[in-house]
Length: 189
Image (cartoon, rainbow, N blue to C red; front, side, top):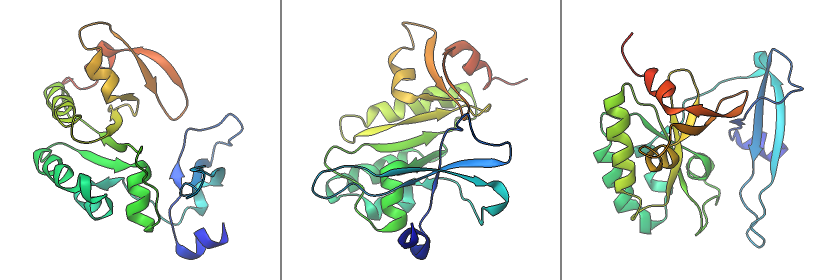
């Protein structure tokens, strides 16, 4: 913990736990994987909101290219250029590697992206864009809807014609929800 604080490395926001007080923010310290075993140390923390010195949005795609393995940089750069106009952000191992300079990414790592569509058309265009890069990059991540609820974009894309039910995550819960209700959040009032 002392090394983390001394280096001024970030903590990450995590889902609220049942024992958190109203003014607490649930955070986590995600250390890089152990080089030998691959084990990942994750420390859950709760901090009163008044003690948070600063916070920032997830990183833009262009801000992390330098931290990618060389084998992914060209295709990721293409994704970054193709995503102009869509709000795509990076979280997870790649973001932590870019922010800390520590080795988080492994050969089996995913590139975790957050996608915040502004309307239904952008939702459809953005998921098609992400799917078009799946054979070139190990993409994963979430669609964040205006309510703050999130759905894995791969699940959303895969089940679009098969079912209306998807796994919906929020800061407080994980539940099955209806695609139509989430899509309605993106429609004009």
